Image (cartoon, rainbow, N blue to C red):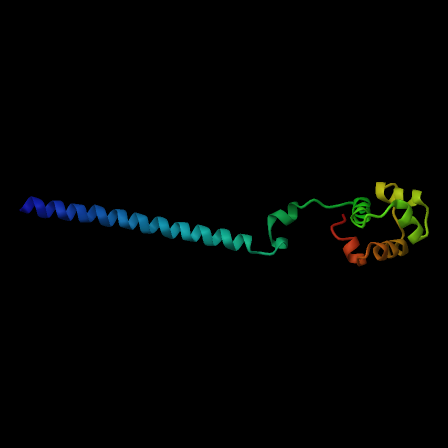
Length: 121
């Protein structure tokens, strides 16, 4: 009888020990998930990925906008009032457009000047 009581007490002790370990594990998992969710719900400017995002050159931005609009260099040149070669030089980085030409380019591409120069280093 005494042995049976001791066995029951030992079994209860191990049961409580395993229950405590299980509860502790669940608490750690919940904390880890909350931390993960909080870190991924922040706006991109607060995350490390935003800092690692590739920046564009002005030449690449101009070419990207032109190709997005499916326009030729000739069409852009006529709309801005420059030669096709000038547009080509802007897109290869050999030269840069003037501020007035940038304003006209933004209008041709249907974006604001800020959007045109967004992500440009």
